Length: 326
Image 1: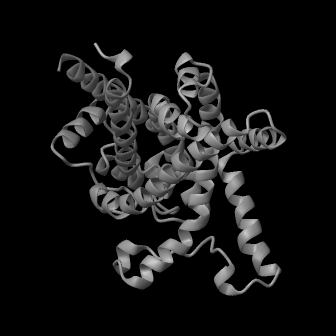
Image 2: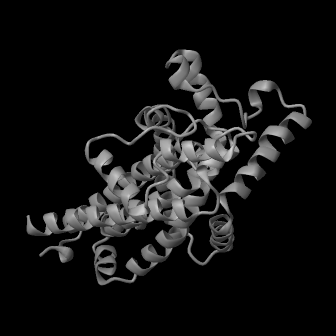
């Protein structure tokens, strides 16, 4: 219980450090929010009134204290640009981002581990070398570059080659489910528009998991218990499916925790490239317009998801690996 409380406290301190640094950095960025929100013809007096209205004329410490008070009262503030509560914006964009992130993370894990096990079974072959080179190349590629490549091939390329409309993967124009409701047509539209962005995030994340998973699995194959299992007459498939997978679970949990921040970071650019109405796109729009409340609201949501997921993974490790108990 003591270890659980200590880890939870560490996670909370890390969470608050992230949001506090974000609060300071966004206000240290060049540009005046008031200048961006008033008409070009506004006078200096109009700008000053806008700064006072948004509380930007107060010292940074005062702004921070006000913001902390609002957060602890359950109020994330109101968007400067959209003039609506940040909680409403998050309620509209969070489900879209959760759908994209959950699908990508699940496929990242399953595909990455599957490729790693396949490479272990064919370790040292030419195919293994080719797959290793491919995973390194994909893992090193920026998400936005992979996204633009897939759009060029499966959207514009498919159109130029005369593929039927149903076979062309759409890159833009997804209907926002929050605005029209989750009807059958909106779900079909969501699934069709999910293919490319999910493929981008999955390919990059799965390449990383496959790369590190292969290395760890090969190390495990040299352990004494593998030789003992084979001496008992177990086939290679049985050794891999039962003993190797179970002993690799702690590493796989760590890899899953490490993959989540990559999915979150990649989703910001992917949502922008594919015009997804999610939190990543809302974050970039808010940064461009110096909409501090929205930036902080999205930061809180992202930081909470990543830190809590890593805390859960950390707490699961002792259950999966007895050597970590105590």
